[in-house]
Image (cartoon, rainbow, N blue to C red; front, side, top):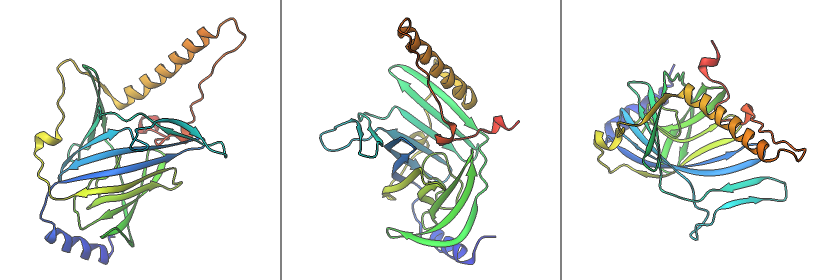
Amino acid sequence: MKPILYFFLYTCSSLLFSQNSVIVEYAQISETTYIKSNTKSILHANNDIAKQSHFKPQLNQEYEHGASINENGEISIIEKPEESDINWFINQNKNEILKSVSKGNVQQIIYDSNLKYDWEITNEVDSIGNYQVVKAITHFRGRTFIAWFAPEIPIGFGPWKLYGLPGLILRMYDEDQKFNWIVTKINLNVELTESDLNPVIQDDASKMTYEEAIGLSKELRNEKTKIRNTKLGGRGNSFKTVHHREEDLERKYEWEEN
């Protein structure tokens, strides 16, 4: 049952919130056993649909990039910044995320559908910047996620794939805090049309389900390993790619439960 305090915050904020669209910038820090990476995404959203643009980060004003290793043996990767060619389009009514990836004139469309979120809204309240936030918890694809959402901004989207709360997610992390998202900028004074938030799909775009995309990714990893081993042939060495699912953001998929 939703706490009384949350109900009061949501009711008041719905009356005060005059805009129905937002633009939000999130910073993501991912820190697994050996690698730490930083990325940025920008969310354009109204009450029903959203577009996320995913960017590679810059280390500083000189646009330095590459990899570094500290005294503890941890590797930090800063990729070369570039314009976003990866966009996600999220439709709450269809319960679907469409991922568009473009390389040159080639476009790939991936459909991630039938996403299941069973949010537990707690009675814990905190503040982020000038906003009061409420804690919510969900379990998704093998991880437990904690989200802090702002009822004052009643748009039910956030970073990555999680949505469906009665307020904008300002901070989110998994229970192990290996993956963290935090809002860095919010613009409430925007007007977005549906054309701003809907994908443009080329007639010759390659289309597949998310399950098919995961399978293809595995095949490509195996193929790269074979190519490396071919180049090492005759030297008495071999190369093996080890993929640790426990380190992935998504540890388990719903089609694997059947």
